Image (cartoon, rainbow, N blue to C red):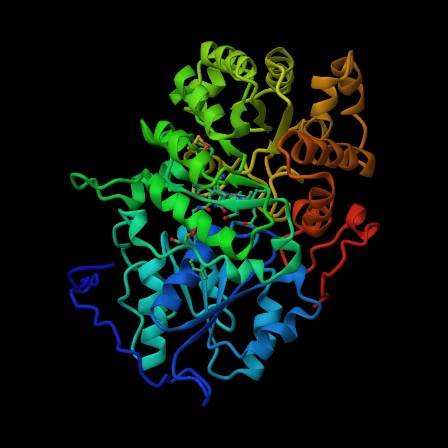
Length: 526
Ligand code: B12
Ligand code: SF4
């Protein structure tokens, strides 16, 4: 935990409030009750950690998943929160505003904080003054404690590091404190707030994180700017951090003791091969102490054959890596991915040799690429024979180097609501936008069907239609469920629960054409 008191930007020491009767809370409770809310049906690592930290400090925390509650509004209201915490990626921030307005009518003391990637780079949510009371930038372990306790004690939140607030009607972002250096110093993530839901605890695959950061700094990803912005450059301060193997094994056994039915683990980290030597130690300890097979992401520019051997020994069945573009020039010079063609052609052969299946991630429609480059991406995939291709449409996030350029250069159609997902539509102003979006939907046909490219070249000229969306979903489902081992039924159900996020709009109205034809189940309407 924090050692020396943190000095706020205005030089005022932050005093941690001792647990006391809360100005926020209702009569029966003396501490803050924090309800996290999310719309995607998934176990979110950030929320698990924040919940365990809050509980460690004596507060109450829980998480409410929109898809899993019969009556989402009532479930949160009945829990009587003092604080509602929204996790938001860009495009995923506005969905709960209507709920919050209604909760605020019922719970006069309710405060609302938004955290996650979106408010870390954009203070726009603060302009919804009837909804959002504060935002948090970056890693929020210590900020949420300070914030909740300041609210509970009726103190000002204006000087709390990481917190964004309106001061005299203007958004103000406080500087952030150093990122958590030792991940082993954090309590085990609180999985109970997600595994209280039967669907999430009955899945075959458990979602786990063992690191933060990434060795690469790709220009289309938020990680590059996080690195620059979140780490001061002080000697010894790290952005890439990994839990110790011992901690991970203990964390896992702690979860399995309560939820013994999981059959596999998916490591959601940017790359499991983040720290040299980690996989070797993991390969020694994990099979003996945990022994579950797993899937993970890898950075192939840091991967040696010895790592692949260690991954296999540890129980890895499937890996995923970002090819992103078939053009080496785009990959290296624009995306700054660090994957040369040599690496792109060598690693898949080694993965096949050691019998680990692999899937690629690919981007369609960035301003760096022509439609021909995107067909080249399909051809490179055909050559390296992945067991599956995930294809995302380029989205210009303001939290990325490339996205910032796009906004500055007026390349973005800012009026177009493409929803929260990067699988739905394109915001880029390009003459061939229809072809790009259709190619993303039909990409797998071009890769896996004999003669597929010729057919896809014809089809992408047609107007977008549900059959194309369905093609994308079918490939996604098959590859995710079968190749990566998530299980056909689990993945089908998960797909139905999250389909609104994949093809929906950003605001409270999240359904459109194709979705309206499907009963996604369990979604309470507002
Ligand atoms: C694992 C992952 C996923 C997983 C899990 C979702 C998740 N967001 O955790 C899955 C596969 C489901 C996923 C889906 C998507 N993802 Co994603 N994902 C990641 C990834 C690789 C790691 C996130 C993570 O777990 N980090 C570790 C934990 C500990 O950190 P954290 O989640 O950031 O949490 C900390 C803070 O954010 C904060 N915090 C978190 N929640 C809250 C809540 C409150 C109230 C507060 C105050 C603070 C707070 O405190 C936490 C602890 O310090 C990041 C890249 C990255 N390295 O950050 C991309 C990233 C978050 N994803 C991104 C995107 C675009 C998506 C999708 C929209 C993709 C799509 N399908 O179209 C969806 C959105 C789904 C959703 N509702 O969030 C972008 C977001 C960019 C942006 N500016 O919004 C990122 C940054 C990658 C990128 N392209 O740049 N993702
Ligand atoms: S390798 Fe992945 S997580 Fe790392 S910077 Fe690139 S896109 Fe982001």
